[in-house]
Structure formats: structure tokens, C-alpha cells
View (cartoon, helix red, strand yellow):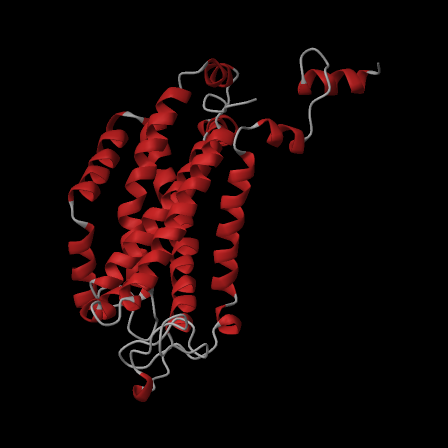
Length: 305
């Protein structure tokens, strides 16, 4: 065996055994077919959101009062021209549901990365620096957790008016606290490890220690936390829109549709029920995918055949 092959074998496996392929490792994980199914369904939701202008049969804000409260196609008096019926203003429910998917996923796509970046930075500073910095940053996190997010959203909406920007602002400010707490706990443990002490002993700077030794060990935790936060973000956006402090009326969202349809629940059950089912379905799929991904990335939780 050549020197290059020996070095490669030593890195891959101390005994020089060939390492299984990614597909083989995946098959060893219990429940991998279900995990792939969850991810596939989530990707389908993403596709619907991305291609909403193409998939929506009508303009979601187009009103036809003569066709108001038309039932879904499978009910009596329903029509396949409006498969999911119409609302109290004659707007097509299917088109509004599709555009609601776009709004929910847009909030997820923008809000979660910003929240992750802010929360991870706070957690790194608090956990690695310690002392006064840790106390100040953690008190700020406690303040975030103590202040009601809904009250803050109402205050922002009263000042600036309902908008998607306000929803993302609320998610970033109050969602970063969870990342900061989790990352801080991980960093407090990692900074005492032998490899960090060894890096300090050879004169490595703090920036290098964080970039080369701390952050790589946080990737799995952060990725899993991001996937589990998807459902939380979806519910927050729906709750704020339901209360009228989220997206404006010109941007249909699932929470807004539930709020508008609750007064007609006895005569038009589909108005609040269908967007409610969409919220539950997307949140459930995101949570299940996050749980599966946690089992894949965390060897302590990994169940192998």
C-alpha cells in the first residue's frame, strides 16, 4: 500500500477498512424511507410556493360576488372550475391557498437564516467569551423570552402597518433566543474539550479556534434546530396574520384566510378548514423531517439495523 493510500485509509478508518457509500449508510438508518417521504412532501410544498403564479388558476384577489360561498367541487352545487370553492367575496380558494403556501415558505426562507445567524452569533459570544459578555447577552435573551411576541407584533403593526417585513422582524427578534441558548450550551461544553486546549497551547487565536474547532462541531445542532423551527415559524406567521398584524390583505396567507372564514364556519366550513389543514400538514411534515434528520446527524440518537 502506498503512502497516499495509507494516509487516506488512516483518515477514513483507523484499520484501513473501506467506508460504505452514502446510500449504504442511509439504508442502515431505521426509518429512512419515511424520512425521504417527509422530505419529498416538503419539497413539493416548496415547488408549489415557487411556482404559485403558474399553478394558481386565477388571480387570488379577483372578486366575483355572484359566485360567493360556492362549495368545493365534490359537494352539491360545486364546480370543478373552482375545485376548493370560493370565499365570501367570490375569490378562488385554491388560488389563495397556493399563494398562501408562497407566503409561508417565504417567511421560512428569509426568517430562519437570519434568525440562525443572529442567534448563533449571540450564543458563540456568550459561550466562548463567558464572564461579563455572557451575562449581558443572556439577560438580553431572557428579556426576549419574557416579552410577549404577539404584543410586540401588535405594537409594530400599529406603528408601521401590517406587512411581511413586520412578521420577519418578530420572528428574528424572538426566534434568535432559542438558537442563542442552545448554541451557548454547546459552546460551554466544547471550549473545555482537549482539542480546544491543544489549539490554545500551540498559540491559535480565538478566531481560528472558533472557526476551525467550535463552529464545525455546531453544524449538526444548528441544522437540526433550523428544521425543527420551520413549524414554529409557520405557526407564528399564521397567528400574526390571523390577528391582522401579519401580511396585508393584498397578500393572501393561510392565517388570514382562517380569520376571514371563521364567521362563515357554519355555512362554509371549507373557508377556515382547508387553510387550517394546510398549516397542520406543512408543520407536521417539517417536524417529522426534522426529527428524522436529527437521528441521521446525531450518532447518539441514530438507530441502525
